[in-house]
Amino acid sequence: MKQIYILLIALLMGLSANAEESGTCGPHLRWHFADNGVLTISGKGKMYDYSFYNRAPWGKYIIKRIIKRIIIGDGITTIGSSAFYNCYKLTSVTIPNSVTYIGSSAFAECSRLTSVTIPNSVTTIGEGAFKYCSSITSVTIPNSVTTIGGWAFSICSSLTSVTIPNSVTTIGDNAFMGCSSLTSVTIPNSVTRIGSEAFSDCTNLQKVNIGNSVKTIGEFAFNKCTNITQISSEAVVPPTCESGVFFYINTSKCKLIVPKNSLDAYKQAYQWEDFFLIEGSTTGITNTVYNNSGLADVYTIDGTRRLSKASTDEINALPKGVYIVNGKKIIIK
Image (cartoon, rainbow, N blue to C red; front, side, top):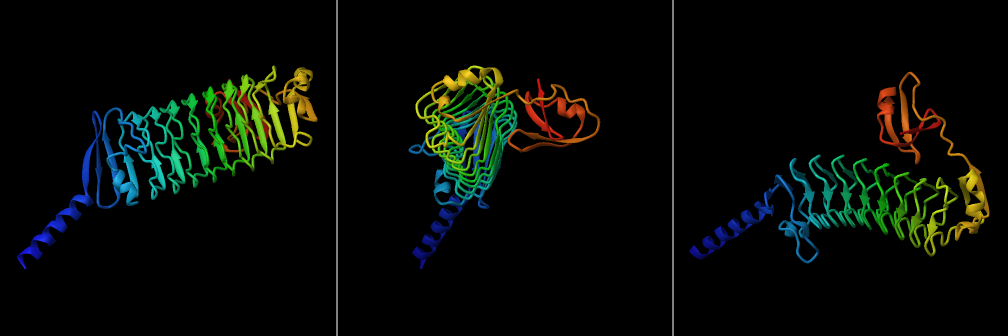
């Protein structure tokens, strides 16, 4: 009987130890997992990087699929690589304003994650940061971000809209590959290169607007985007296309709209010359400062509402870019 009591006590102690645990996850960071399924990260500074083979110290709770919520404390400056990889029960996460870098695969394969708030402090979204987050429906990338890493939002199959700000200069290889619910995308004027296969296999993509600073489009960037019906390029000089950029796009029916004075250049440029329906157009921008009185809703080019019932001052304070206000395009410089 005594041995049975000892075994029961040991079992209860083991369960207690498994139910609540804590440790370090950075030089000045600590983590704590509670028996209600909440993982809390606290402290100041950087989080350690992890990998598929060197899992985060809370990895066993991820494997057991018992993490329900993650609280990332204010003061944390980076989210480590693979920190929350395959966190199956996670449905939403708020990243504090102290974070400047989201590591590679940080939230990869969090297949139930439906929403994520990326603060204005973040400058870099690492490779595969949200790869295979198949339940995310929309993403607004703040105007602090300069780099969207390769595979960052790839295979986010429920993603219907994405706002890329005019601060981004690089869209990495495969960044939005396989986002099969995405219907339109606007590449802002700040971007100089669209990575290889960046939008490959976006099978419901219909409209693409390419900003005026794009110099190079990587190979197979829009491969298998079979439903694209219109591409607008504001670049005066036709961007250099690497191999297979428009593979499987019906170039005999897809309309290509380019600057009026660049018509001949596009008609002679490699791969651009394959389009049958090439039209010349001005940018369609009506004014550079919004000065109408009254409140108005503001939309991005891809149709995402950016502001609701905004004042003139609020509209003119928007980040640089092109917006639609009262049915007209305006540019904020």
